[in-house]
Structure formats: structure tokens, C-alpha cells
Amino acid sequence: MSRVYNFSAGPAVLPEEVLKEAADEMLDYRGTGMSVMEMSHRSKPYDTIIKEAEADLRELMNIPDNYKVLFLQGGASQQFAMIPMNLMKNRKAAYILTGQWAKKAYQEGKIYGEAIEVASSADKMFSYIPDCSDLDIPEDVDYVYICENNTIYGTKFKTLPNTKGHTLVADVSSCFLSEPVDVTKYGVIYGGVQKNVGPAGVVIVIIREDLITEDCLPGTPTMLKYKIHADEGSLYNTPPAYGIYICGKVFKWLKKQGGLSAMKEYNEKKAKVLYDFLDESKLFKGTVRKEDRSLMNVPFVTGNEELDAKFIKESKEAGFENLKGHRSVGGMRASIYNAMPIEGVEKLVEFMKAFEEKNA
Ligand code: PMP
Image 1 (cartoon, rainbow, N blue to C red):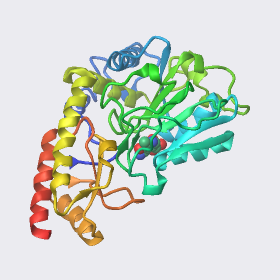
Image 2 (image 1 turned 90 degrees about the horizontal axis):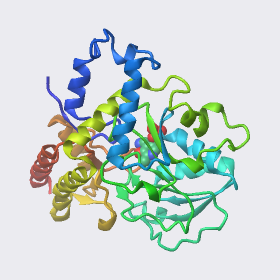
Image 3 (image 1 turned 135 degrees about the horizontal axis):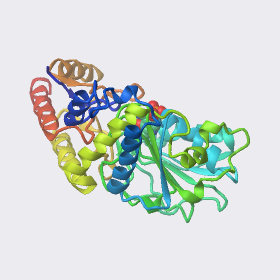
Image 4 (image 1 turned 180 degrees about the vertical axis):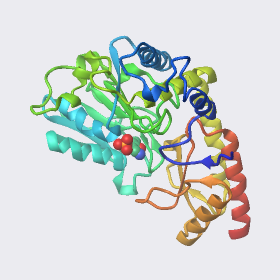
């Protein structure tokens, strides 16, 4: 068996320990004689799996009791619609546009009401986070929406926007559990898990209880109401059961690593290896304003498309997978989520140095 260094933006690398444990339990989960994949979601062993997953996530993120944790489906993209359908009582919401995923959410929001762009970094190809300390936010918006870590462009909010008292909704898909968060600052935190947490097919929504109401927009399908999932403990219908089981294992792995503060320290150390090299390289350049750099997604270019293509080809041959930038921006991107070991980044930098010597 040989595993590559997988720099995919998502689905992405998972802790090897978790994958091995899941493999060991594949045919007979702890004496049940069946795989978790084959198990009723209403069975006793599954009840333990989902409850433990929730409890471990609550512990990791220090989630207060007045927040619900929902394990849903439909990917992060389904939340682009669920959020306005459930939260847009005044049919008005403010969006901060820091990249394609924020823009998609904003466009979806427009289907349901007045989605207002209150800040944007589109003027410089989303290479920075705009100043959000004093935005012009209308009084009657239902929420202020951000994409906290921009997977494609490699930017991250280092301070949350001043929402002027309005509910903050954040897509944290690509920075989920990468560092501690103060949950009380948000009304809704949500993310697809396929980057830092587990297999695609699960989206986790952490939502303050007072935002969960019967009062959704007319025509909201039952499956898209937070209330139904909250009331049923994420078991209104068959949940993405196996995916939740893997998320649960990743939560336990994170606890073993020392929790989110330890993870942040490790992620900072790991990202520094790559950013320090980019800052001194004669060939490679980071594309993001320094103070807004993400710890998770690191885009870079040589400034020459042919050289970029050569680098992507040769790096793949050397065992570094998925370094191609998003199809909309080109160049390269190394996604270095929680489960990417620091050795992976060190080896990548060694490879980049050798490439630079030959090609600069
Ligand atoms: N938000 C962010 C920040 C993302 O990176 C992605 C996927 N790359 C999405 C939303 C969309 O996720 P999904 O494919 O699960 O709908």
C-alpha cells in the first residue's frame, strides 16, 4: 500500500488512523455482526454513534446548550437555500462577497428576498478580506452572511465582521475545526464536512435555538426546515449514517490531538512552512494579501501558465496529488487541512525548491 500526499480542496485527506479503524470495523462493527453501513439508523448501536458524535463535537467546539447541532445532507450548497428559507423573516439579508461560494449563497438568497451586497473583494480577484468593521448594514436585515474561509482564493476572516447586532451566519466548510471558535458570536455556523471532518454527504449545522421556528418562507419543503431536524435529533429521515460515523471518529481523533487549540498551533506551524517558502521564492508567489491568508488553502503561481502546468504534472509524478488550482482561477493550490501531516508540507517545499532551481 502506498498513500500519496493529497492536497485536494475536498473531498480531502482524512486521518489515516481513522481510516484504519473504520476498515477494522467494516465487516463487524463491535460485535454487531454488521457494518455501520448496513445498520438501522434507529438501532441502539447507531443511537450511540450519533449521540457520541454530537457530544464530542459539542465538547471540541464548546457549543453552548442553547445551540442545536444538526447532521444534514445536501452539501454546503443546500444551506445556501435553507438559510433564507428559514431565517429571512423580513425577506432581507446582507451578504459579504469574498469569493465564489459567498457569491453563490448570495445569488441563492436573491431567489427568496432582497439579498444585499454590503462588502466585496471582487475588485482584486478576491485576494483579500474587505474591512468589515463599519459596514452600511440596513436595520431590518435578518442576518449577515459570510464565507469564513474561502477555499478557492485562500483567504480567511481573522476578525469577524461587525454585524451591528444582526445575526451572523457563516459557512465554515473549509476551516471547520481547524481552530477554536466562539460559537456565541454566530447565529448559524455550518459546513460541508468533506474537507476537514469526514466524507462528502454530511453537512453540519450549528444553530442558535431562537432561530429555529415553524415560521419558514411559504413553500419551504419539510426536509428543508431546521425545526423538523432539530425536533427529531437529525433522525427525521435516514441520515447520512456512515458519514456521521466517520465524522464521529474524526472528532475523537481531534480530541486525542489535544482539541482545537492544539490543532490551531499545528496548522499555523504547518502553513508557515509553505508561506515562508513562498515569501522567499524567486519563482513561486502566494496570491493572497498576507494578513488574510488561510491556514487551510494556499494558492500560489509561478506567473507563467506553462510553468504552472509543468509543475502540476511533475509534482503529481512525485506523489503530490491535486495541486492544481480551482478551474476558475488556475495556478496551484495546496489544501493543507487538519489531517495533512507537516511532513507532507515539508516534502512539498523540498520539491518546490528543486523545481525552482531547475526552472527559475
Ligand atoms: N462553501 C465552501 C466554502 C466550499 O469550499 C464549498 C465546496 N468546495 C461549498 C460551499 C460547496 O459545498 P458542497 O459541494 O458540499 O455543496
